[in-house]
Image 1 (cartoon, rainbow, N blue to C red):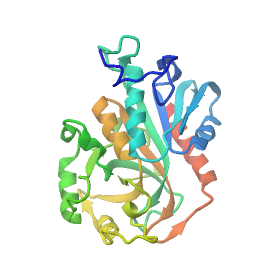
Image 2 (image 1 turned 45 degrees about the horizontal axis):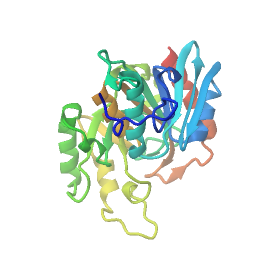
Image 3 (image 1 turned 30 degrees about the horizontal axis):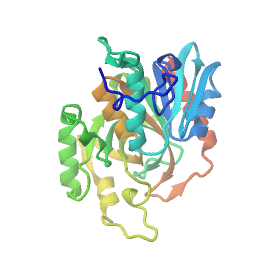
Image 4 (image 1 turned 90 degrees about the horizontal axis):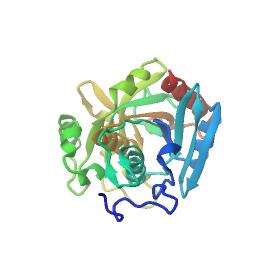
Length: 289
């Protein structure tokens, strides 16, 4: 039996942070950072059957083309993803009443829809990028046993060698997307690439305001890196943990981002919301196909 201190439930039996019970979610999950974007996604649903919110974690579950889908906001960062992924998995793979792991594991399809900064000149603003791999600069997966079994260690070693990775930083980890979900996003509208999840918005992504950067050349090294014809295309802050924890727990995961700024060409689209709606609709259509 899993101890109460390890699996915390609320008085109504819902999981601690998300305030969800197993019957409240679908097997297809869309993750977004911004709680306001949950309403945008749910605005395309044919029917809404459940909604709840606790802190930054807002959930709406409904039906789109007869598929039961839940959209959940995670807030920003891989630390929040650690909460969301573990609690989602507990909802489907742990009997919350007996606090025991179920004999038969269930699998979720988890797709993150986010905004991102492009790192290549041929990746213009408003591009849709599907992450074939995600690199975590956050170190989260290093806290879980046997993470090497789920990561692309050859890619990691090549990346660390190319960037002369400092031991002062958390060891980066690299995890592949779900091939089953990648196959659903094979259309030409989606560009493929490798995404970095950074543990911050400013210095970890090479932005300098009043504090100087410890590694001022890191972005240039990232842009020039290539391995097995794969290059790094964009920065964001969540997908590495989604990929890593999903793979370790037996779920399918994919990240699809809208490029709202290009860090190389110094262009940006501050009014990206209409483009985001196009991406949301495309994701819903592909998931329900």
